[in-house]
Length: 359
Image (tube, rainbow, N blue to C red; front, side):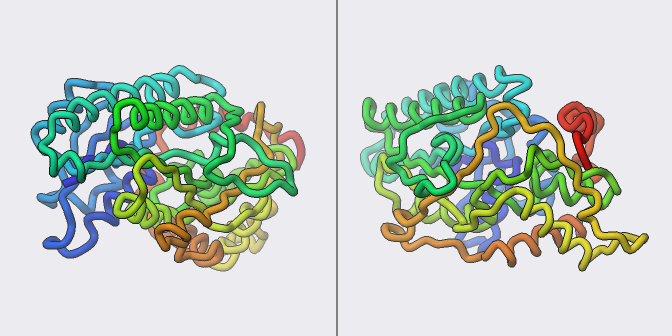
């Protein structure tokens, strides 16, 4: 059995679904702890309803008593920590939730796990793992011609979100070196794919395009990111959990550096093909440029050679195959899209992208 935190969110939900997708006799059970904030969605896990190998618990990783009880009752062999506030824009407008969840929550989770791990019998203790899922944003921003981030790149976070994740990474490292806790850390590039809450770039473009709304692009749209299909990320986490060296960090990337504007045009072209506008106009005509956000990092890029060299992992999807699957998933799941677009979500988008500065 494993304990997954944040398993009703985008990446965590995909991980839980993938973990339980295999034959019943081969897949370990999952205890899924999620606070169900705005981005946590039980509808993501609807296919697991009634599955005895999935136990969902609504709760906070900062609730030490709850985490201790779950560890004592279920005795998982591993904890995989996805739980985090993760949206840069939201961290700019309200950082406190990021401090509480990503820093204080991670600290309390580590302490509960350490207490549990310390008391385990020797064989269970040696087999136990704590895997912390983090982001490439902790490394800061890269110049256009700079080499990609490696695991030894210094931390230079530039947003409240990335600063809070950097702090959590440091805590995980410290609990390994100080207390011996058997930890693993992964730092991933930008994920995309099914179940992505439509405040992030790709799902926002799909949802707005289909609704006939403007497609807001920050600044000149030339911010570069490395794009990783979420199911590839899930397979990387499984591989690190299985064979990663204790105390080590593994960068997980898709080898797909692309500027945001290219991503938007790619999404528009796929929608032109798969769901053309009734008036025959291209979706790209809906693109509008909005004022850039404060401290917007210009470029991220992941050097994922370590995980390939040590663990034999590399992504299975190209960007072309992954983005097509993603757009098709949103077209095939209009009810999911409609259900996550609550009043608070619509208010958030209106606040964030008030008006285009130019067409």
